[in-house]
Length: 273
Ligand SMILES: C[S@@+](CC[C@H](N)C(=O)[O-])C[C@H]1O[C@@H](n2cnc3c(N)ncnc32)[C@H](O)[C@@H]1O
Image 1 (cartoon, helix red, strand yellow):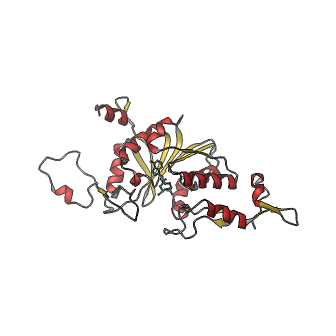
Image 2 (cartoon, rainbow, N blue to C red):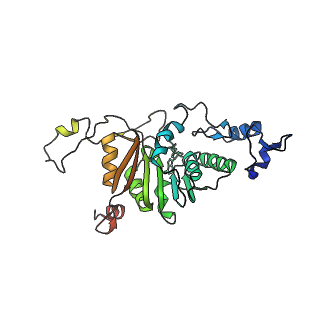
């Protein structure tokens, strides 16, 4: 039984203990968690875990233990956009660090319901909307932190998404993708002749693996980059890498999101890039 005396919104989950302490009814909580379907995020809701048997372990805590150190403890006043928020793990972490406004977006109703439930259960004000990364331009304002974790490789049009996201940044991007292939990174020339072919046989040349059918039993895994490709694409979208807190996560700031005064995305779309 967890002490819930500071969470008045949870009356329906509580019973009053003899000592007048508000306590959570963990049976009810467990049932409500189960009713929300299978969870991808293993959240700790007052001692009840939402995905205790996740195939990646205690996910995404295993990632957060590294990434959390690269994000300020105090986010007072910050605006955060969590793209592909899933069950809300990262939104919750950012709100618990004092972010003023956290918006989580996802395309999946089940995950959004889970995130809503988790935020309410923890008494956190997190805005959740059903919206695709491809539609981020519909969101008003810009953000001190954009979290874009675990979505890139699920997209058929990954750079299209990245070039859109930059338009919503005024601070940092926390970017994570599955990576496969070589983890070599080295400098490449700005240009090669048409007849130079050997570079494409080098394992460290930036490359994306295209998954025609399915990978990890998931047909939404479309493009899996090697490390060099991740870093090259981030730069190509106008970002500079400021930190890599764990092997699959890069923290970026804006280097130059525009070319001659216009966004890379807009120039590409009208053929002037
Ligand atoms: C592998 S999960 C990653 C969840 C979370 N960001 C994390 O890193 O733990 C991918 C998430 O991206 C969401 N997603 C997939 N396509 C999306 C899109 N076009 N726009 C927004 N979210 C999307 C999925 O519904 C899912 O919640």
